[in-house]
Length: 546
Image (cartoon, rainbow, N blue to C red):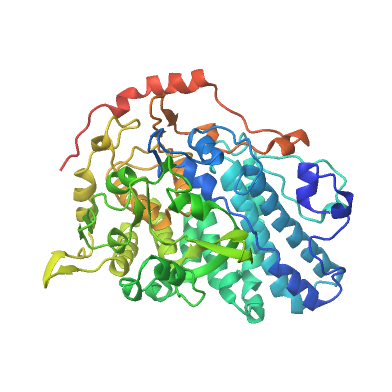
C-alpha cells in the first residue's frame, strides 16, 4: 500500500495490496538497488510554480489557455486532477516517498548491512527531496516566527501497510526538522551509492546531494550550512560545474535544448524525467496563448531588462539575449523543451515528458552568493557573482565591432550604482514603464538591511530569476522575500499577491481534504483589499537615486 492511496482514499484494493514496485519481495540487495531507480519522482511542480509567479502576463481575450493555467494565473484553486495539477503533484511526490520507505524497511529487515549504506542514503535523500518539493508547493515559506503556526505536511517514515494512525499535517517546524534530519543522515554516506549508478546524473550523486542540501538550508535560513554544502558541490573551481556556453552559441533551438539536458553536461548535477505538459504550456503560445511569459515580461522584467551585461536583444552580452524563441505571446529560452515518447508513432500518440536539470552549478553558485550576502559577506558574494558573469557573458561583436561588451568584474560600488539607478517596480503596474527588476522586499522571518545588502540581493534574485525561468524556482523566492506583484487581467480587476499571502501555499487536493487532512487557510478578499489599501504609500512614485 502506498502513501498515495492512504492520503487520497484510493479504493482499488488490488493496487493497495501491492508494493510500490513490481519486484515482489525485496529479499536481495540487488532488488533494493533496482527499486531505488523507481523512487525518483515522475512529476514536477514547474507549471504550478511558474503560473503563480511574476514571470507571466495576460495576452488578452483573443487567446486561449488550458483551464489549469488560467485558474493558477487567477490564483484560484484548480478544479482538475490531471497532469501537473496539485492532485498530480501530491500523488507523484508521495508515491516517491512510499517507494523510499519500502526500500528503507527492506534494508532494516536485512540488518542494515554496510553494503547498503549508500542505498539507505539515497532513499533518505530522495524522500527528503520529494517532501521538500511538496513543502514548496503546499506550504508557506519557512518563517521561524510562524513555523509553529503554519501547517506542515504528513511525513511518512515507514510503508503504509505498517501504519495504523490517521495522518496529521503537523507544523511547518516539524516538517522542516524532518527534512533536515533525512538530509543530515544521508550526506555522510551518499558517496557510497555513486559506484552503482550507470548514469550518475539521473541519481542523487554526491554533488547533487550537496546542492540540494545547500538549497534547503538557504530556505531554512541556515546560511553557514548553505555555504558549506554549496562549496562541497562547487569545489575549488566552480566553473568546472558550470555551463560552458561556447558550444551553445551557434546552435538552433532544438539542438540547444537537446544539449542542455545531456548527462555529460558538467553543469547538470541532477536530471529528473517527468510525465508533464509543463514544457508545452510554458514554451508554446499554440498550447497556452493567453497567460504566459510574453514579450512584455521578457523586455521589461526578465531577459532583456537592463543588467550589468546590457539590455534588449541586440545591445546585450548575456547568452540569454540572443537565444529567445517564440512569439509575442510566449517568449522562451530553450532549456525546457518537451521530449515526446511515442507509443504509436504512426498514430502520433504517446506521452509528453520533460527532462529538468533540477540542480545545476550555475544556479548553485547564485544560491551561495545569496547565502553569503545574507551573512553580510559581500566580498565572497561578489566573487560568485563575477564567476557567474564570466561564464554567461561574452563580448557581442558585429562586423568586427564590439556592440555589447561583457561586464567587467563588479564591485560593491558598481552594484549599488546600478541598482540605485533603477526605479522600484509598482505592485500593480499601469504600463510597462512601471515594471522593473528592482522590487520591494518584505522578508518573511528574516531581515534585509537597506543599502548594500538589499542591492546585492536585488541583483542576485534577478540573476536567479533568469537562470531558473521556466523551471519553477522564482515563486519560492517571491514567497521567501515577500515580494508583491500583480496578475493583470484584461477587462477585469487585477489579482494581487501580497507579502505573506496564504495563497502561496497551494490548496491541497479535494480528495486529500475528504480523507480528513486539514486544508490550507486563506485570507478573505476583504482582508487582502484592506492590506493593499493600507500599503499604497509604499508604491507611490519613486525615482532611482544615483
